[in-house]
Amino acid sequence: MNVVCIGSGNVATHMAHALKKSGANLTQIWSRSLDNAAILGNELEAKSISTFQEIDRSADLYVIAVKDDAIAEVAVALKGVEGLVVHTSGATDISILSSFKNYGVLYPLQTFSKKKQLDFANVPLCIESLDESVLDKLRSVALGLTPMVYEVDSEKRKILHLAAVFGCNFVNHMYVLSNELVKHHGLDFEMLKPLIMETAVKVQTELPINVQTGPAVRNDEKTILKHLELLDQMPDLARIYQTLSKSIKKTHS
Image 1: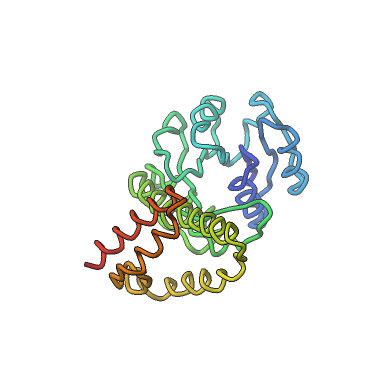
Image 2: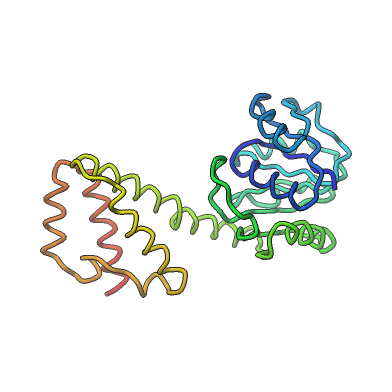
């Protein structure tokens, strides 16, 4: 299977490497930056390109792994190709590719960083197609990458993506704020890492609602007030603290 990867960012990098490992032939890596395309292209022994005119029109699979706002532009540039065209976005409807004969979605539900290796076999892949024969092809491609394959339509995929923002992006931002807080007071974020790890481990076997701890779930108003006093000079953090504490209280009332 000859594959053209449109994109060279985090998702594109991991997806392209997983496809290569599954036996696919990565023929081209496209990026607006030829240097970025070359980095990934050299790793995969694929041709690096930076213009749409250079894209091979005879590939079997085109993986669009670019930022959501650029998917429509790429779809126009690929107009007329006969191969299977998929995007990897969690928040973009499948209809954006409806001009193609063979199209679908291959959405990896994971957070990716170029420098952080991971086992793609542990990545859930959400697939979608409105055509049963195309869905079969997508399923075959996906199962070559991971056993964790789910058929999810566009509306439910958007909900998954939103949930991932809460469960990953917002949580990581809490780590950022936590780090800033301890650093501001001359403490080391390393001290909090065992706590963070234990919290993540708990939700692997329990529902999150059943393992909630802290002053808000205990309705410990004295501690909450003390915390807010400590945040007196940090109004943004104080507002976040109050909003989250209120939400925890409401959830456990």
